[in-house]
Image 1 (cartoon, rainbow, N blue to C red):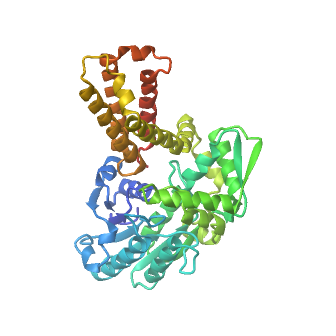
Image 2 (tube, one colour):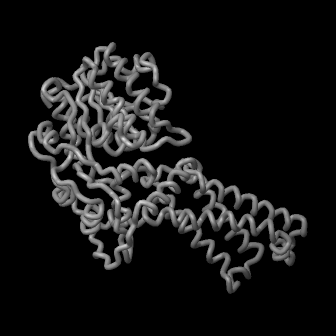
Length: 437
């Protein structure tokens, strides 16, 4: 670090890129304030920095930023959302809110603004993620503040999120691998290079103002990047190549977009697929200017942090998570519907106990309604963790209740109580896989 420590505001400070930047700048002695919606998570991974809670959609007026920017020397915008959904609007959070922040920075005395944009961002891009980034980049380029705009390609780090998580999930597929047709070439960049570019921009704000693509020299087909990650993860090469064209990926993107309205931020949504079709390419010479050397190549990036057992398990677990959740949704919705449809027959199973027929029927109906509620809760991202905890609690209740009231069910050939144990295990697996990025 050259000179005295700076007071730095980082938007998206607990994100994939933002958290790496915040960690390194805090370690260098700078005074970091993180901005985000989920401060409990932010504080858990970066307890050493200050935090300000806020939703960008409510900060579209320059005045709303005034108190936050007090005594701030540098603003770094590492925030971003891939696609609009029920609680997010790309144009509001990536354009309106950030332009308001730029205008507030101009009048507050902030000396520098660093924008983490995206390679290919342009007002003429094919989708709103790149368009919104492009509009903000243009506005920042007109600002009198020392501004550095960094446009990384596919960012690869030790952890995974978004596009790189999708790459690792595909690389973990057993028995076969998709052969992607109709996609452009991709240039990658190490997360460490993105962080270093930010550090160099802070040290040389005037000399390194402007816009810089951050990409390695080689542009690669997506299949090659997947194959490199498969090799990195230590999985055997598969013998069956499954051709995947635009139609199939379009259907997958459509399905992922529909899931977005239930709160699920799949890396396979339309904007991500469109970016892969367009290709992610930039000028590697610009990366060499701001880094003082060429960007690290993909092979060197992966060799820098050899994969271990945890990486293989994570890739496979994330690949299986949608299927696991679908199984649980089918189980609990099916159980609830069957309980209502066959309520009298289910109550009859309790007929030989001391329970009256009315109480037995009420218990069946109560259990069926609870099952349906849990099944619907599993569909929505906001409620899935609570629903999974509920499925574990309900399964335990069925085990205890069944043992007390109908212990012979443990000997039933269809093993309903034994299968409840498997349901608990599957719910616990999903809870682990749903841990935050």
